[in-house]
Length: 180
Image 1: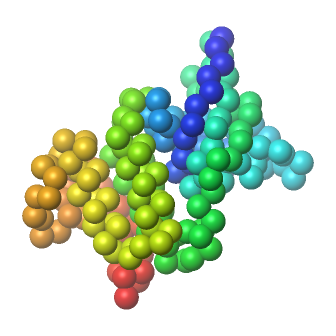
Image 2: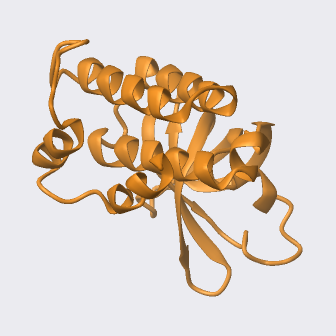
């Protein structure tokens, strides 16, 4: 039994049961973690607003010997990227970024450079040209994870990423709609 306090960005969530949710968080010191958040879908939950997608939050987790998934006990939002969430185009790109992180990064493997890249990209997405930010993010994440050298010219980066993943990206279909 151990308690862990960590800072992370919520990149995915999935409802389970009546009131619970499994969230995927990319943390600064523990990499990508899947966490069970019991009771957060209840109206009276105080943790619910702190674990919304794209929130940068401080999370307190409890690891029990019976459960393989850590359990969320406390959450506090540091930054919520409200400008990104308010713009449909920006949030579409943010979901694409989160899908890349979720699919390319292994579970429970510390990678601070990817954490800072994710945080910086979401900050840039707030105020910058979206397509330039996405292009730079794809180049930097592929480079940081060792799939290709930085600034290596590729004709179709998305096809290259899908080849690495051996599956089609779900958000890829909406990207052309966002770029027009």
